[in-house]
Amino acid sequence: MTGPRLHSRYPSVAPRLPFLPLGTGPTAVRRIDPHDLWIKDDSRYGDRYGGNKVRKLEWSLADLLRRRCGVVVTGGGTGSHHAVAVARYAADTGIQAHVVAVEQPYDEHVEEQMVAVRAAGATMHRVDTVAGAYATAGRLFIGAALRGRRPGLLPVGGSNAHGCLGFVEAALEVAEQVAAGELPAPRRVVVPVGSGGTAAGLILGLALAGLDSEVVGILVNDRTRVGPAQVRRLATATARLLRRHGAPVPDTVPLAPFDLRREWLGPGYGIPSGPSVEAAGWLREHAGLAADPVYTAKAAAAIRQLCGGWDASGPTLYWHTAPGATGH
Image (cartoon, rainbow, N blue to C red; front, top):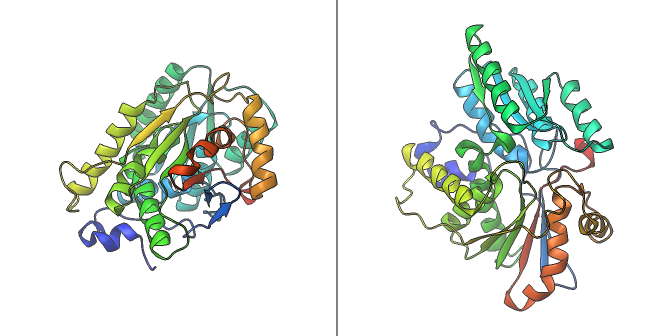
């Protein structure tokens, strides 16, 4: 393809919703035996940094450039993958990035992430609380505006309507792979849920693509409120964005079914659990994939426990959202 599927499907939105190509797709799908389990590997989607955050930035950074923003303010934990992705790709576009980072349990991975953010030229502002993060982000936004540098704001995880377009696009990608016979139509798609944008894009995109799949989200964040209602509202806002820019998306577009599971959160955000540590090893052994035990591996832990019971009801697609080894 020479451009995004959304532009091909809805040509009228192309000049209004720009796209900045940052990754190479479609990403690979493959089956893992003995269960009817399939994996879609987004770990190397981007050249500068992989994972699901890059798909969101292809649309949200393009929108910041369209609005001629010179500064972007975003947030996350001190070990945030989103923060590293924003720092690297914003630098490539000439946008100065400010990352408001809420402290999380410290380990080697967190240190690597903080070093990567700073190495990309972004400024990191460490805070102790979510409330402090909002206050700091507000000050940075106003300060940039007063200095004459038009600021843009990206929420935690890049989960706004523009960012969610990345996973509407990704759902259309999966539909093409199903049509090409690369995998069967999944009965369910399993993703980790931190800020909700990946799940929101998928529940809209799968419905638009005509796939009868349920999205199962595995909650990994208890710092900010993320529930089924918030995810559905974000999906609906994304549909409104498409409609406002000329896409013939119905006012009452059906969303794919969505189930949010909390059983694998463990002690909390940024803290590994016994099952997530074991699942990280399982992913490495059976799929050759790296997964940090505080985020992606919690979704893998859920897969390990639930997949056997799901076998009889159809294929399960696990969407691997963590950056690969080349991203660090």
